[in-house]
Amino acid sequence: MTIAICAAGLFCLAAVALHLLTIMLTIRRCRPTVRVMTAPPDAPPVTLLRPVCGIENYIEETLRSGFTLDYPRYEMLFCVARADDPIVPLVQRLIAQHPQIPARLLVGDDAISDNPKLNNVLKGWRNAAHAWIVIADSNVLMPRDYVQRLLAAWRPDTGLVCSPPIGSRPDGRWAELECAFLNAYQARFQYGADTIGFGFAQGKTMLWHRAVLDRAGGAAALAAELAEDAAATKIVRSAGLRVRLVDAPFDQPLGRRDAGEVWRRQVRWSRLRRASFKSYYTAEIITGGMLPLVAAGFVASALGAPVTGILVALAALWYGGETLLAVAAGWHVTWRSPLVFALRDALMPVLWVYGWTGNGYVWRGNHIQTATPSRYGEYRIVRSFTRMTSALVRKAADNP
Image 1 (cartoon, rainbow, N blue to C red):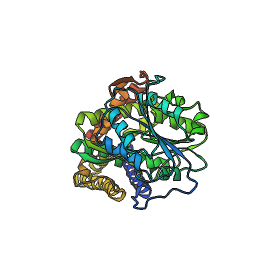
Image 2: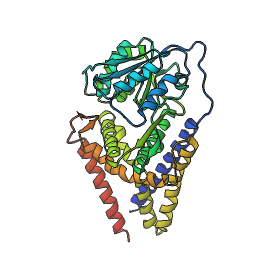
Image 3: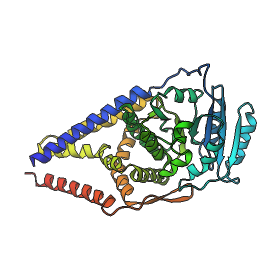
């Protein structure tokens, strides 16, 4: 029993330390700035590739933001798979309204992979006029110094610069839950990993120098993984280069969300992470707040300490820290945010299991299969976690 108490206590302390460390690192990287970064006189020309598909919340605003950049030389290539897509008239109107920006709409689909976004964007990569190429999702809201901030993050050892999406302008409780996943959790861990030199690509915004990807076989090389950002991470690392994140990441205005939409999106991302980075996905179960709270309650109960008081204090520290991060970074935060963070963490163990036990998802009407699960891989890990948790609960119950 003593071993179990010590193990639970050490796990709780390590989890809290990691939690607070990632908060501090992210605050340092993501403080909002009012200064607009100016482009240098020798600013290189840049191509912006924007794959589009369907009508999304705030879509006109996010697409229009690409036409108002304070950057001297850039072109925009919009990529759409079908000419009858409802987004086409909007893109054509925006292009007509901004004749000062070289922009084109490219139609067609190169079915080289199971990734519809990659199939859509390949024609844009082939038609890009410049060596510096940004692939940016249609729902990214670009500030005026968008390109400058991406280029400023590039170093001699860089192979790719990205920005995680920061959820903004949520409408309703479920959109707030999506903010809780995107901002104080996913972005926080991405910035923590990036700060120690172990960054992961994020497909929302990717700045490439064409030569880096062309050495790996061009944009078609991103078909090596089901998610193009997972493939990008592996390509860059295999070249001995680093993925870097831009400081102060860019907004993705969310608008209205329903519960099913948020859940399906999180399940999709979980299954993609499990398929591409299985060992890292395995460790995700310990990153939320629920297991540290369970461990703290177990230790307090075993030692005869006031369980309720300790749990309240730990929850206040845990979710108060996340709230402080959101305030310091200028991200969405309300009085409900700590409760939404707690709801997110309560869902995470269930989401983690869904990630292991499912093999497909639907994205924009496309049914996509991840790799076939291994009986002694996915299910063995889930069974081991379940047995470990059950044993811990039994030991707590047997404590005299």
